[in-house]
Image 1 (cartoon, one colour):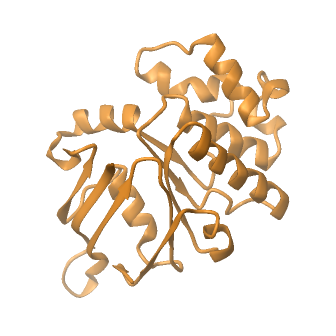
Image 2 (cartoon, rainbow, N blue to C red; image 1 turned 90 degrees about the horizontal axis):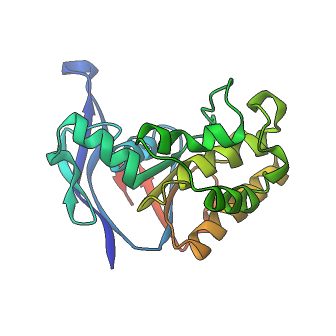
Image 3 (cartoon, rainbow, N blue to C red; image 1 turned 45 degrees about the horizontal axis):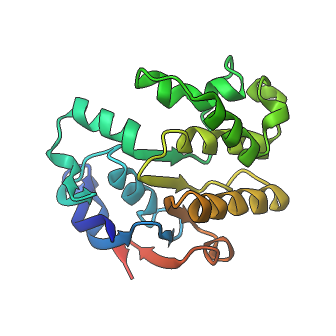
Length: 220
């Protein structure tokens, strides 16, 4: 069953001689429950593609469908609600709020949506993340790997249709990177999460079900 469909997506930045085509007529589809890695060098367009898929930015042309919904037919407010409820994004730099503890950081998407976390669900999430004993710790009391696991919990807590991981191991050592990849694979298998991960690391990409190569804004 198709979850994501990208049709002839292009993104151009700047004008005239300063114009840069970050994405050039990209089309692809991803099935529900699939783990896809998009691999490319710095400047290849992979981050631009991920941000467009997640509705963080709007394309110059083309369409993105999630669960058969044309996300760019929405206005900005509708798109913000869509992102909050349907998309979980894991960033390379964690983006945790320093004055909130682990549990509070994970709960942010629910709070923004006017909801409360179910205690049993939160307990299960913290256990899955290996953060039960770190529940009340602030970000500066955590290792890099623990901070990234917190950000993964934040991305998963709303049970989104689509999880987008933007170089999720980029700031981590080899051991922590392995832990994060194992956690993403568990989320994919046990929670049936659809995951799209961008990376420049082919070895990490081999953990995915399918690898898509991107170069100079084009799918190869």
